[in-house]
Length: 480
Image 1 (cartoon, rainbow, N blue to C red):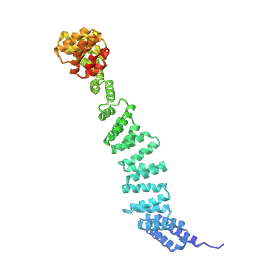
Image 2 (image 1 turned 180 degrees about the vertical axis):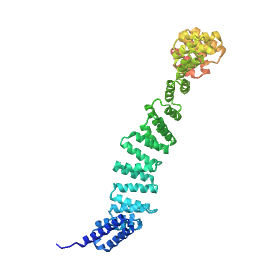
Image 3 (image 1 turned 90 degrees about the vertical axis):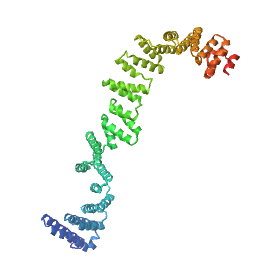
Image 4 (image 1 turned 135 degrees about the vertical axis):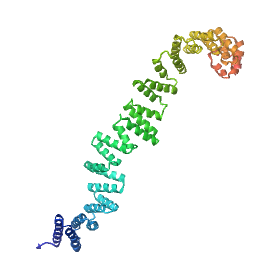
């Protein structure tokens, strides 16, 4: 075994001594002497290239130490040269790439070069936290916000403790919504709901139309209509009406008495009677009866069969005759004849003696099959106005249903005496003739009805009044 130190060991010992002296110079405040020593170290290693090349990884680290010393002495260009010498020896030296990048950051307008170095380091170690943090900072300097946030997110994925770097950046630039988004995601991951909400509220202060913040706040604070309505309005601005309605309806299930949400739904569709009814009921519950009545009235205007408006209004003034008339008409038009009759009867009880009232009462009774009472009502009309054609016509129809064919015929005769071209009167007269077996009268009566309204031709074929005459040549001739 040979005695003494090898050539390699001597070179290593020499370079370590030079760097030790440089460090001591710095501690003593003798920066110029330190700078001289770093330069001496480079010259020494370059001169010993034959030895250095045999141990590239070892000597690459020395070049990094030299580069750091030059950087601290603010000799940035020479520091870059030292790091390049390190990388020439070992391109996988992550420390060299990182220090070279940070040196470029310290130099004016060299951030793109810094980014290239950091990306090289991350190719070697994709989860290198120092490289990621420096990359995020460089990207911020370059104004590439989305990439900055992505890099910070990667840092959080690797180690949630890296959130401290985001906290620092938020303090420095509190008006950056992207950083607040990162804060919110972090707090959500550790279950700190209040801080999540605070972060998203801050985002909305900075950007009232931020959809993610609105959606999250609607999720975490469903009872706060501010966030739900803001989110819905943002969706509407984007033309997403159905999405806005789904969001609002979902919020309404959680907070069913929220008038802000209801009003926004009605802004989208003011003909939604279900939502209008909710609004009316809430207003009524809150004691705002005038607005509740106005809303119930809107419902009735959209759906005439809905008489809630009249019922509510009559609770306050049960003897309001105008409302009772309108309620009765609404019920009759909705074919709710029993309710309509009860309403008209109330008007009679209140002393009303109007022709239209008696006629309406008779019409309800007729529809309910109360033909005798219907006749009484129509007689009341005729007592007041004996030339009221519709009353004669209606009374004739009621008498026909009762089988009082002569009384019915008399009523229809009164109709045609006053208005000869009333087709329904002639048709009923023909039906009576058929019921009485009077085929002699049948032809002129039914022919006149069909001449005035041809639809009676088809109706007669299916009318039970003519069942026994279907094979009669006279009847066949009339309807053919």
